[in-house]
Length: 376
Image 1: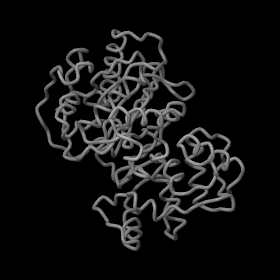
Image 2 (image 1 turned 90 degrees about the vertical axis):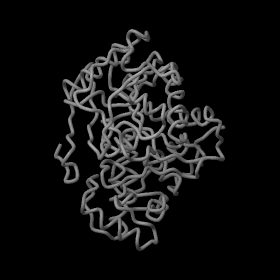
Image 3 (image 1 turned 180 degrees about the vertical axis):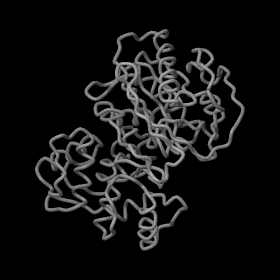
């Protein structure tokens, strides 16, 4: 894979490890360096810290971001779906993952902030992740999703969930961990996303992703919040350092709006002035990083029905085909297969399954969260 123009300081590495495990991608972002330390946490005694599981020292200083943490990104590890649910296995999993990331990928340390084993054990991943969770301030810069490594807490879940779903023990611990991260960093259940919402990958797996509305609802309840507290829509916020499928959807829609833009999923310098022009034209504030925010999505996404054609339909079909609807072809024609997939996606997110792609359906299709998906 070529290094994109804005990725001069990043290296994208795909390596095969345990059981065919596919390692994620590393990103380097502006940061404030700090002294390394790791001590058991009385605040979160159920998280096995790096010292306890016997982590190797990082190969270079762990850095702390100057950014604000604004989301959680969930992954599956693409490791085998083992039936050893013991604590010893969880500790060995953490060691194997760190070895893979440091020795094969050449990273400074484990890529993710936290790991959840199939037996429900939660382990610190990258050093200092537990320390910064306790303070709830600036997070450790990780290596789990390019463009989001300084903004998002990355949680790896042991296993491969293309066709299988995670064990209940894993889901229970994941909910507890997500709730803890939300409390400490001022996040909410609607700030939980999947890796493939921001990068071209099969992670977190089709079967696991279908459980995200359930996971978010459980986190909402654990936080003592209610469905009415959720925003009507929480879109994925892409910006000029985030590449992937959601960027490609934005490009389809910008092209349909009359801009001449390559539809390649790369948020490059050619996209920056176009986003700025669209936002300025529609009275939307422009940021230095060309952040594609809720107002931008909602000004750009057209309502689609069975009579729709063209690039917006192709954008919907592109995302549906990536999320397991293999019979959906990218044709630009709102055919029967597309209608059925849209209705299925609507049911999954608690929307009326009318097959009409309105703003809430668009939001759900591109990986966002809609209020209707929550259950009190």
